[in-house]
Image (cartoon, rainbow, N blue to C red; front, side, top):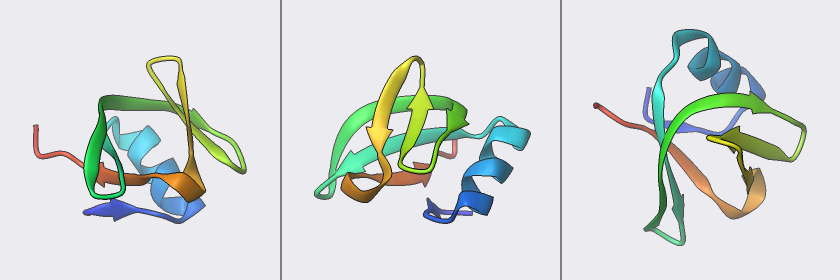
Length: 62
C-alpha cells in the first residue's frame, strides 16, 4: 500500500505497524514512524499530531 487516505487505510497501518512518512506539499514534513492512533481529523505519530487534510501519509519501505 502506498498513500494512506481512508480511515480504513490508517487502521490497517496501525494494525500492521507500518512505518509511515509524512509529506506536506510534496516535501517530507516528518520522517514519521508507526502510527499510534488516528482521530477523525488527525494522525498521531511519535506524539506528533498531523492534520489529515494538510498532509500526505506514505507507507515507507523501511
